[in-house]
Image 1 (tube, rainbow, N blue to C red):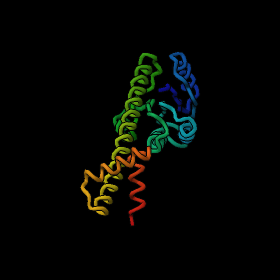
Image 2 (image 1 turned 180 degrees about the vertical axis):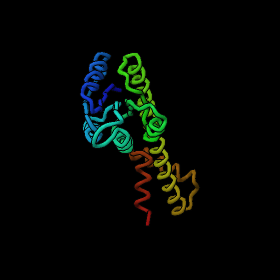
Image 3 (image 1 turned 30 degrees about the vertical axis):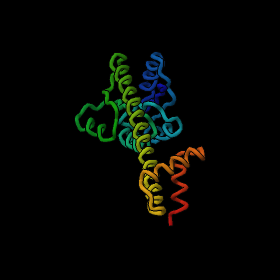
Image 4 (image 1 turned 60 degrees about the horizontal axis):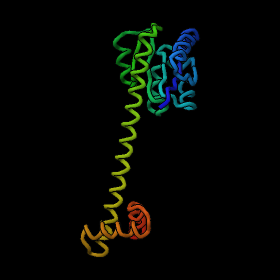
Amino acid sequence: MGRNILLVDDDPLIRGDLKYMLLDRGFNIIGEASDGFEAVEECKRNNPDLVILDIDMPLMDGLKAGKIINKENLAGGILLLTSYDGDEYIEKAKSIGAFGYIVKSLNVNTIIPTIEMCLSKVEEFEKMKKDLNDVNTKLTDRKIIEKAKGILIKEYGITEEDAYSQIRKLSMDKRSSMVEISKSIIIGYDT
């Protein structure tokens, strides 16, 4: 997985300091933005691994932009970098699904480990999403096979085991997956 980062802060000096610090550590800065609207658009274009997002910005603040970015799955994760340290902001950060929250102090010893931890969480989260997608696909496939078996059982008065064997044999004979054979059975017999 890459280490592509989008920097979002309305202060160009902070963005510049961050950019220099991160480039020096081998991160790839794929873009910069100065408000929430730009952040969302940059994410749509570049799908970064991590967005470092300021909360207090003009036009659209970081919390609103972060909510959109997460809801639309436009980035791997979000790290909020802000001058606010109150509990209410931390709770808001949690509510939008931010992976991290750090109070602004552009100290390399603080920000680099936090970024590394966020990127680790991004990788973990992406793996979980892939695993979930695989499970959902297998479940859907299983439902299709079960429906086709049910049709064969009803149509020919055979056992469940015989219906499964028939689908499996057709799959091997036709060199097609059991799911594809099952879909054909469903289409052919479903009324």
